[in-house]
Image (cartoon, rainbow, N blue to C red):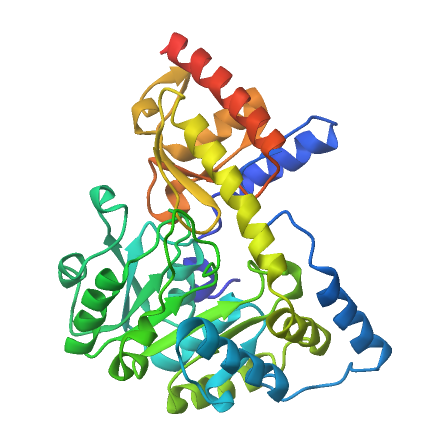
Length: 399
C-alpha cells in the first residue's frame, strides 16, 4: 500500500499523451512533438571529450558529497562573470540536476505545513516538490495582461503567517518571459519586508531574445542575496540534459544544511558528469551563443506562424525555448462528438487527428493554455504547424 505522501503527488498530465505518441511512433507514424523539454542539439564535443578522458583516467570514484571543489570554483567564477555575484565555493552545492537542487532547498527550509508562493503558470514539478517535504504549495495567479509575471500585489493576496518562500523562475517555463530589474526589485522588497526566502530558478538564463537581459534577483543587493537561493545547471545551456548536473548557491548556513541533506540522500553526483560540466563552464562559450542564435530564428518563425492560425492567442516568448498559447476560443467546441473541455482534451484530440503533440496547460496551473517548444528544426516546426492549421480548420467547421 502506498504512503499518504505518495498518494498526494499528482502524476504528469502528459503521461497518457506521451504514451499514445510512443504507440503511434512504434506503428511507423510520423509524430511531430512540440512537447519535449530539452534542446535538440548534441552536447558539444569538448564536453564529451572531457568526460571520455575522465573515464580513461579512472576518475570514477566518489567525489565530495556536494561536488568536486574544482567545479565549485568554476561555478563561483561563472557567478561573478555572468551575474555579478560573489559566492565562496563552500556556498555552492553540485546536485543531480536542478530538480534535485530544488528538493534540497525545500527540505532545508520547510517544516510541515509551511507555504511556498508559486506564480502560476508554473513548471509542473514546483508544487509536487513542495508537497514531497510536507509543505503546502500556494499558486499565485499571474495576470495575462502582465505577461504572466507576478507582482507584489499578486503575492500579497496569498501571504499568510505560514508563508516561508517565493519561487521565481526567469526566464520562465512555460511562458517564455523574463522579469525586468524593476520587477525583480519590487518582488525582492516584498520578500525582505516579509522575511521570505526567494528560490530563484535560472536554468534558462542564457536563452534570451529581443534584447532582453537575464538578471539574477540575488545580485540586486547584499540583503537580498542573504535570503535567496540561486538554482542553475548545465542541462539546457549546454544541451546536457541526460548528464544530470545542477547546482545551487545559498547563504552559508543554508548551503551547509543542503549539503548535509544531499550527503545522505544521494551523496555526490556522477564524477564523470562533473568533469563534463567543468569543461562546459570553463570552456569556450561559442557553442551556447550558436545554439541561442538558432533558437531565436526558430522562435520568430513559430510565433509569427502560430499567430496567424485562428483559435490561438500566442504570447511572444522572449526567453527559454517555449511558446505559451491560449486555446480558450476552442474550449466548449466539439469535433466528431468529442467536446473540448480544456487544453488536455485539445492535446489528446490533436494527437489523434494530426499526430502532433503539445503539452496541455493543466499541469502548469493554466488549463486553457498549451506549451509548445521551438527547440526543434524549422522544417519540423513548419510541418507541425501545417497539421495544426489543418486541424483547426476541421475543428471550426464542426463547431
